Length: 89
Image (cartoon, rainbow, N blue to C red; front, side):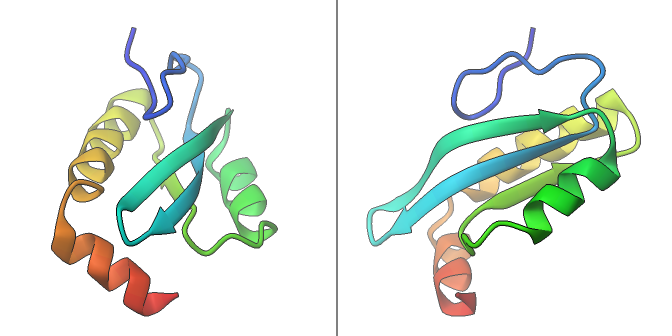
């Protein structure tokens, strides 16, 4: 089974994943992930947290969600993306 950045198995029913993150000059760290069965639930949770470094992955089906999760994991390794995130906060 595929796993989130913090090592949680991604359930087949998941349609959005909220990463609660810490961003500093060393990089970004996923402190906790929360999985939701609908895109709306994930968006609602993301809208109601006060942590600008957190990230939301959302898709209408499992395959697209996993694809987007891998894309985000790759971006989280890139200095240019991290710098853009820092600048936007």
